[in-house]
Structures are given as C-alpha cells and as structure tokens.
Length: 208
Image (tube, rainbow, N blue to C red; front, side, top):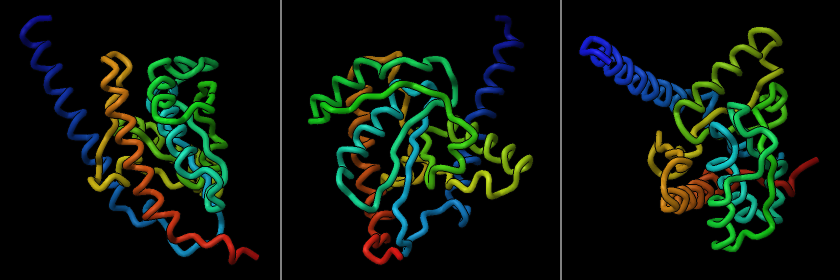
C-alpha cells in the first residue's frame, strides 16, 4: 500500500467510526425507539451480532437464565446480520463461559436475521454499531416496501441498558478467552438494565 492509499484508508476508517457514533446517537435519542413502559403484554427479544456464534448467543443464554420463568418475557432468540456460520453451534468458548457461570442447558443453531424478525420481535438488540446500522437499513427497506406494520420492532444497542449509552460488545472471535469473559460481564449487566428499564414496567397480571 503506497502513501496515498494509506491516507485514504485512514480517512475511510475515521469516517466509518464517526458515522457509527452518529448512528448510535440518533437511534438512542429517537423517542420511537426507546423502551415503552406501562404495558401488559410480555415482550419478545432478539439478540443480534455478525455471525451468531459468539456475542448474540451469549446474550441470549444469559438473558434466558436471568429471566427464566419470568412471565413478562415471551420469545427469546438470537441471529446474525450475516450468514457466515448459518447452521453452526455457538463458539465453544461462548459455551464454556456460559457453563462456567451456571448456564448448562443452553443450545442454539446459528441463523441469519429474517425479514419476519422485524415483525415478530418487540426488541431487536444489537451488539455493536455496525450491527445496528445493518439492522436499521433492513428495517427501512422492509417499511418502504411493505409498510410500518411489517417491521415495528424497536432497534437498539443492547449496551444502552448497561448504564453507558452507546456501549458496544467487542467481537471476541479472534481474541483470547478473556474477551468472552468480558462479554459475559457485559451481557449480565445489560440484562439487569433491561429488566429494570423495560420489564419493571410490565404487569402481565392485568392482561385481558
């Protein structure tokens, strides 16, 4: 790579980071995408990362354990924005960290996000800004072609429930195991925040 190409690559990288930051700020401050309290209907949640073998399965596993038997929660699932690992089991490091923390019953087969997910889930929670950008683009495309009723899901960063708006979960796939341990801590903290901010406003005993 020559000097000019290096400058262009650096500029593109800076632009990509700035764009991601702006997307996160816009989405987390848009009223229609913020949690809605005071409902009586259980919520369904989809966790999304890139390949659906590391971060989103861990988020799903942690969320399932922490909301087990909670009547305020309906369907829980995870998926990827890409189909790179479709049909595969979660990364062994994800499963080991989950097992070491008491989640021994979780199982999952990786899949790609479907158009129907934007209709079937109340919350679609992304692991990072790029995931959120891809999901937002898909939702806008669906709404443009089929109308708002075809994709009413609320798109957010899962990290928005961790106490620091815009917090992302770094993909640990190419790193050491401590990356999975850090991700587990984040998922636990984010789930607590979701329970406090969203589930605390749901009273399923008042359903018709």
